[in-house]
Image (cartoon, rainbow, N blue to C red; front, side, top):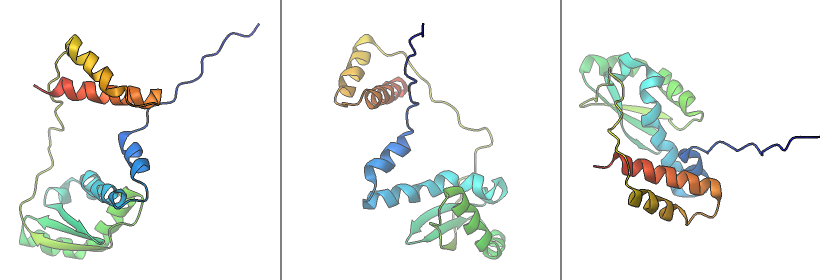
Length: 158
């Protein structure tokens, strides 16, 4: 006799994947992709360069970097093609076509890493409210994801 097998539950999709699917074909889809430049920058170019140069703006294929000193401006001028290639590789597509370098303040990458924000226990009323807010989603998986996001947001608020 065969044992009943429960259907394997799919893992929740990352929010960025959901947003990409939702925004596909809209101008906002491109903006979402462009925003990833800031996410991948430090790892793509390495700590040494990231501590002296950071993305400032991105417009029509041109990434503008703020660089903290003239010697680094000069050095990075020679590395433009390599930097473009590294960022595009990290993005898995060719978004950056040109680099523009400007002197400016640079946010230093955190050596200590990211600290988790303080969390608090939700009250019964807050838990019920989160569940109620998520009910608008028809899909059970999506509903569970929304409820989890709402709960986490509330846990991190003071």
